[in-house]
Image (cartoon, rainbow, N blue to C red; front, side, top):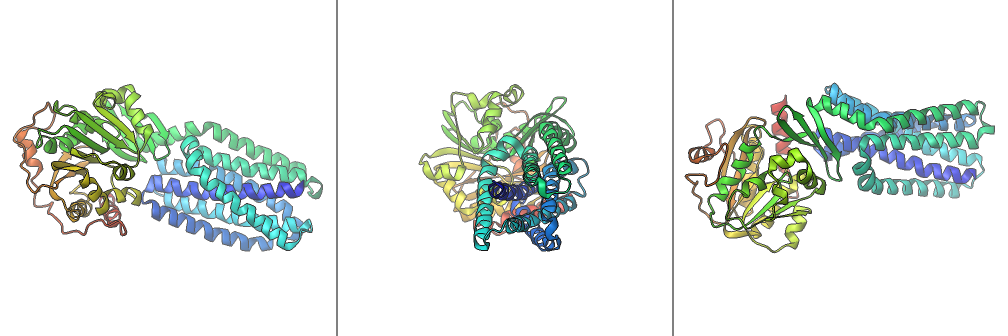
Length: 503
């Protein structure tokens, strides 16, 4: 029975150990962006700390192995369990020391996790287990535990529990290992009852944290965003937060502002009408991204449009903007209009499997903050989009800020050109974002700015639309390389551009 309990302990501690690593990496990428850098540095720090912990385990005396294993499990459970909550609160309310707190936390947890397996193997050895059986059993269940959590974390735990609750859950599991080990080996422990009570206390603290993690997340996000949080959820793909301040609704995805209801009309009118008014014969429109339905709202103003296909990855995003009353009022019910078909799929995979051709395409993806998003702005992706664009149609791409992120903006322009398309860059001022850029593109070589806007607008008119295509002398065109899929230089440009702004 003890052998089985120890084997189960190996499975659990391996699962929890990798779980803390994934939580730290995911939290860092949510809050800091650039997921490859965050995952690489967190994993590297964690594995190094595990090596240090394994080395330190040699100093545990044979007579103290059981006691120290129970103590380590309690510490891993307590520190690892509260780590996500503590880091999130530090980022929201203190901000400056977040990176230092992250790596200190990762190192401490890694050091303790590194001690677990050597101590378990020494406990097995006290049971007179044959060495080859000992190694095969422990390592087999160690790797099995890693496989289990690597599948369960992205598919179930992160989207349904969130990072904070998942952290507390792993902590409870570690504390439960401590509890049953103390109970099973109580006759070998000098103060077994004390260890049982301590384990029960830690489990109770973590259970309270699990129950209150929703309130903690809300408190942290109030500090992070400043405004009242009226909706927050973690989906399979991202963290969605909607805030309100008086009459201003704001959407944040993974901590990044997507729009403010006070000025989003500027962005979406500029995104849609310069291109769509140039093709008054357009009937069929494709929108990639734009799950908030705001671009679709502008497209629906054109009475000649017969059908709009919206492809957005996240079903929870389109559900939210189809059912939440204040958000439906903002997009004027565009996602439930009979002319609109909403498809929740990866844009690249959907374009590969679909053969339809469209008169106008709107590309409203999030900024290329990581390599997953950067591929959406790559040469192969733009070539794929161009196959779905009619011979005389136009496509428009939101392209970051030509003022704050000029290297990113002109790299996107170069990428479209390498994909065989003609481009007409333009920009407009959106108070929430500053000067923001778009690129109109087509397989045809000509474009004339319409002299009027054919639908009701709050911002655009004929003269304003012509001004969009004029760039002042402090926003010159840059000769940038295209964003090729194997290099993803655009993500680096974007990060470097915005680092300069935020210094």
